[in-house]
Image (cartoon, rainbow, N blue to C red; front, side, top):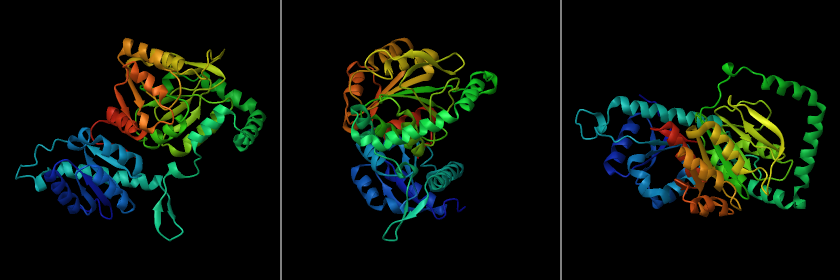
Length: 394
């Protein structure tokens, strides 16, 4: 019965009765309760103060989400703990036959999920020691990651501060040229793989971003659960030659595998594929990427409009679009067609968290956006969209 022994739990609910019952139930399973209360800004401030003592957060979504979006956004942006979102109605709470107001199977199942989520997070977060001797859990998303928002702006405006990155890219290209023949063979084999032997993605979402986009996408991907049944195609405005650097940076913080697009690669769930800057791509009817002998037209490289048009045509109602921080209106035209033809999901980053908000603002002004939120809130939204009840984010 000690499934949660040694685990310190935070509980948030809009019902005091649910709070008390959950606290009693999980203490019965061995958990320590760090904080239990209503999900509001005061609650989040208290949690920020004691977050280093907690292991996992349980949020009762039935009462705590829609009415407390500001508090939830702050929690997602500032608290680096795994979160389980539970949307039960707890219809049996007043049944005297139920221990603590809940059925034992339901509580046992919830306790098991919380325990697994803590274990998964511990595997993701190596324990380190501060100068003052205090233990901290440093997430993958915080280790050795440059400020990608700054990197993007330096790339776009060709600042001299990129010399180190340029040297690294030149070294990588030299190594790449030395193994070109092997890569060509691998790409040839990949392009001729049998579609029956490959688990191609059922659901594909396009992430469109420009200035400030890498930082926003970093925050989004850092909270995406590994089990999410989605493949992402990232169309990020960049200077030529920096796709590899961006892929490396994002791969460090995500439970998804982040890679550059390659000829013949089949889109799979659990992956983020970054669109190349030099050449246009398409996705064929087998879900394979084809890199075309054709340059992007227009001002934007890559063209988010063209990527949205191509991918949504291939996946239709199984596709989706998220527009992150950026300048301009790239993505609006194709999003309009996507909405008209397939009534697809189009979401956008909120202005408050953008470096430049004109790109997501443009799709909002066109009345195309069904959900707006911070990168962390967008991660939660897509997790709940596909995983439903008892969704979680890392």
